Length: 253
Ligand SMILES: Cc1cc2nc3c(=O)[nH]c(=O)nc-3n(C[C@H](O)[C@H](O)[C@H](O)COP(=O)(O)O)c2cc1C
Image (cartoon, rainbow, N blue to C red; front, side):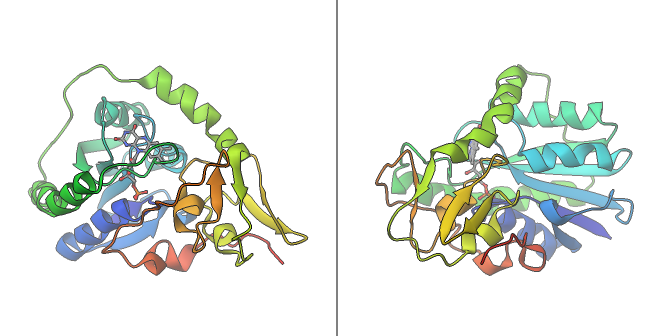
């Protein structure tokens, strides 16, 4: 059986993972909740976003457990790959994975704390992605080897950024629109958000996925107190499917 291991905060990578499941079949697993080492699967298709020209923390941390496993990676991104596919390949190789391919798919940008992407640009990404995804799936089905050629990566920038991601939440606050529903607490993949005495608190283990920011039903989470209303979640993905059986259950009252 295939294992389709995914990380996603705004649905783009889940959209890809669901397409892979429809076409190739297999088990979908949300990486923050996955405790295995991949040995139950013949082939692993790992789907996740590009973060800072590299991999989300949960995916980076998973790689050592997948030693000797046959793995394909599909990376979704918003604007710039900048060698992230090659860097992902290098990390996979250094961790002893039997890495067969790394593919990239352009989707909608979700790192939009300080800027917005034009809607025509987002629409084009949503329109073009399904065709790209089908080509990738066909390539994986044929068992192609698809190694990104050697190129300059941003390994040092990535590793420095990753080390600072935990501080992003220091700049989050909640506006008076917050209704203390606890959704942010439940969806945070690192258990970084709590409600204590009716107050939302952000801790020091943020992984910068921005799930809380984009998916708050009240748009009440603000970054550096900016009043900015645009939020994103993939329009064809049912949000309740994201990590549904395995949502992190934080403590809140
Ligand atoms: C912390 C962070 C860093 C990001 N870095 C990049 C990047 O280096 N290049 C890029 O093109 N997109 C970048 N993005 C955008 C995401 O890769 C893109 O929107 C992705 O499809 C989101 O996937 P998801 O909806 O499955 O979470 C970044 C997003 C976040 C939250």
